[in-house]
Image 1 (cartoon, rainbow, N blue to C red):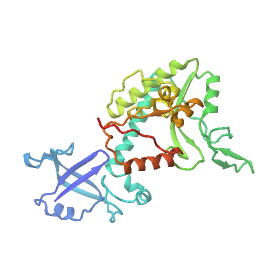
Image 2: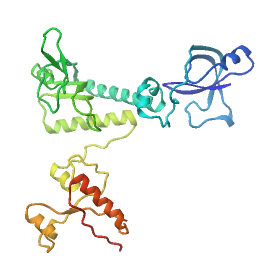
Image 3: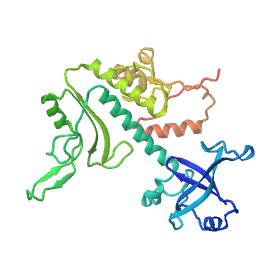
Image 4: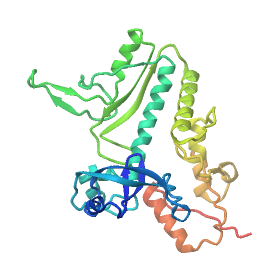
Length: 326
């Protein structure tokens, strides 16, 4: 009998031979997700049985003892990575979903991230200070979560949208370098870039300038990426002004890997007979375009679909295009 023994550290194959009838019979009771303990001897799998997809693929455990700590009913979904289970089901049984190797890797990556951040700040003599969670409501970018006070009837605490007030008090109090990994709360609708509860690295420093802040966070990111995913980040980071970002990418947070940068045609078309162009430039606007290599043979149907998308997503009147095939 062969089984895969799994914990958050990985998977190891266990073999129960027929030499011990009692142990072999007990192993026949095992089902998926049973919690068990194994005693045995680590042996080589042999040349023809090596599994190159596992870190432990060259060995297996020849069991000499088996303890069944807890049995398990049939799970609502298989505990593996490539499952097609509805997200609602996975969240309902989150304690099972957290057993999947993919999810465990993310959790451990997050743990390594925290360790890297704390190591960075402690080495720079930052004070890690926990600030209160129940506080007075202060003006922020969203609505507060309110917590009614039992002691003071009719009054409420607010959950912090950020520790801004407290970290400024720490600066005044002489704690010139502060950080914490902190929970923040914002009462707003759940979207891809909006969370009612989120975690942030909160930092404050006294007597520093803009360049100090840039250099500080570049080194932080360099350390985090190297220690968590083994990626070497080059510093200093490239910089661009807000104006350059908007003129080149049309976004104040551009993904510079995108490649389809805007080209400004305003100077070329300012005197054109085509009033859509010349009139726009005359009224203080600009005319920009993008070059899409290899799309000179794009059909009218595909262009119409792009036009409809632009109308819906940006409110523009349409697309003006030129196709070049040579």
